[in-house]
Image 1: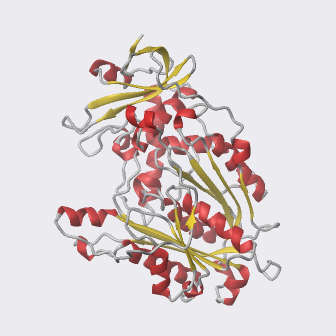
Image 2: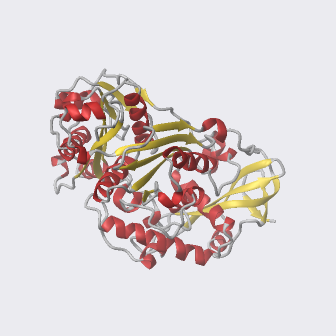
Image 3: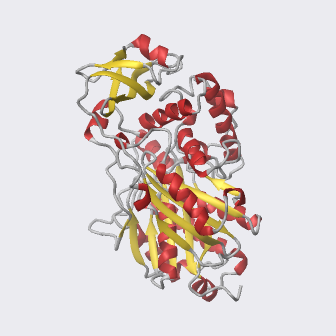
Length: 495
């Protein structure tokens, strides 16, 4: 590889770590888990001393209290790298790889460590036992750099009406996607369950998956005492799972730094291209609820930048917090819904450690590409409610024109949006909906509230219903496109 430029970015190390201690207080704290994942990444690179050479150490923000965990990692490895902490968002791991590649290519970084971890499973178990896992105190510390853009992704109306969390909004997207394809409700549920069965199979084969219990499509599709409905049509086995102890880390270097550290060239993986983009901050303003202009533009642009077509992509890991995210992404990218769309098993089964899933995705992709030299892999990353997006294309073969990156926001901002008609009452049409279920009943399938996006003469309105008969009927027959009346309490009823 003598013809590779010295500033060419290379991904040389990928490490993962999983723990499930019988006694939760024996669990490693999250920053120690990150350290283990980084040590594994250095071993993967064939250069155990590589972390000590870090020019930058970046951490994916998590559910823990450290203000500057990168400084603790520097202490562990004897590094003097500049520290950084990401903002929230599942897009951040791929966005940080894109940023690292840009800075390396520009001569502003040499060795970048990227790590993240969650210890939620052990922490919860310890609390239930009235115990506590000791975390390192970093009172007064601040990160050297805040990486990324914070986005407030709910407006006041969405929160007040019950559209406040991923479990509320992703099944709404699912219903809109179903209607856009003209599918029957039962046929749609069958197809999605079959797709999720393939995700489960990938997780069973992945040693770093949190859930490796085989499940059939029927077991995933249908509610049971251990698999209740959450937001119809999603059962628990179609929701992202973040009750876990997982860590992952990546090491990105310049070709010059990798050579100086003694990393064998057969460990080098080349990021060919990356893109970043976002849809409207508020779902209220999306042009529709079954597509994503940001994924469409940024996903196809990353392939253009890498000089490949969709048929040239051999391996795919799409961000998979909920089935709607996978289906919308695959459709916008031009990927068939019947192809393999995950390497890890997805956020339900492999696990969704808050912002850090895609670090696991890229780490898994690295192993697959090394086992299949010359092939191409695509990783997608998603933050919020199909809000923030990042893409990366990787191969063992170097890019002809070096790493290429683009922020696609200017083009995406030209797509039409919809006004929130927050105070509207009167006749409207159901655009998309879900029925949220509680934990009542023998299988925990009691409907609690129907949440609907409705279209008004002036835009979009959010409404709800707790009518038992209507909620039950909305899980049996398609209600998208039907007329409703929204009253002064923003409750809807059939017209």
